[in-house]
Image 1 (cartoon, chains in turn cyan, brown, purple, blue):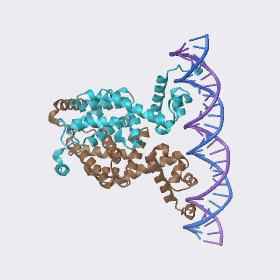
Image 2: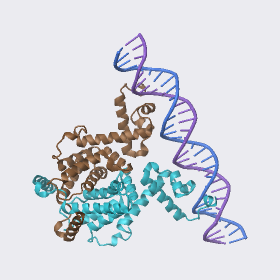
Image 3: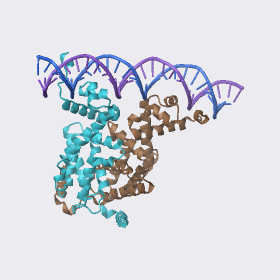
Image 4: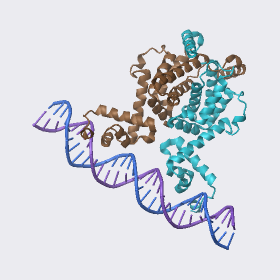
Length: 222
Length: 222
DNA sequence: GCGTCACTGAACAGCAATGTTGACTGAGAT
DNA sequence: ATCTCAGTCAACATTGCTGTTCAGTGACGC
């Protein structure tokens, strides 16, 4: 009885964080529909009125939640956005970046889910800071000698990101335990690396595709 | 006045179709949240009571809508599900399949959006008939000599599908007219084909990645 | 012509979520 | 010590959607 009616100690920042985390979990589980202030407040074990004090309206809560998730994702993959300008652009290790992404995605499928949902709802997803940074990295990679010539970095990054974030959603249903999840992560990063190195088609059997690609590349240069 | 109160001609099948189409448009635009029977009925220019006549509850309407979209997608890409068993499994033309997918995706971004949402919401997306058929096609391709050896068809199909369906969502914001949209479709199918043929990494610069891949492939064979 | 059936319009109760208000509490400033 | 105010909370009015019901209406098949 005491515990139930015990007042939360006054710590606005932590309270806000608690609410945002609850909201992001609900968003991942049930989508936008599941995010009601009642449900969020209940999950966060906070009074509904308190939630309204932190976020004027439901819309603003959702906006803040998406921002929060996006920021978390960004930091997990790229580190502190403040210092990102300082780093050497030459050091683009795509394989390592992809490995980090895969690991993070398998560890935090809810975050990925929210990010995907946000992209689906957004009127212009290409403004998303995380995507921009990722696409930028791949662009810098594509400009090096390490990459195959003529890569369309935008297409390439959409494919990679969509794949990496979707894989846990397909895979999770089959992973009963930690061990299986690790195996699935490994399967994915192996395959994405393999596709990056060798592609999926045996080039020697597809002369006409090679011709088509060459023709299209030629046309592009006009 | 006359037009406003004009009664809809009696045609249950067409009415049902109208409702489903309105529902799928709302679903694509606003997600699950946007699909209220009031909104759907309004968009379909049908009485709310009529909608309830066709679909007992909101849940059943949504279920039927997703089914409807899934079926539409399946037919557009694979043709009639009834006759699919009759076809020769040897004729797996991945490039053509991908081209068809890209075109369809750019022409019908709403359908893709709904499909992606459904996958995000589903507890086990790998049961989805469209994905199964697609993954099956890629598996059959992977088993031929035309493919590079050792492809993980499941990973490969998740990457491809996610990429193909996401591309229009990123691209659409930038496509002002038909012409630009065509260009973006072309960009995507070109890039996916290029990646399929040659990958993204210049193999000669990555001996250590090649070694890692070989080691992992060796380990898998135990 | 007559009954059937898809559709319309309007009303109703029930419910859950929204957003508002005002009272209370306790940590930190004066 | 007490004043202040951000933070917390319960209760209220309001809104909008759901699902139901029912009395019509007109198109179509028999």
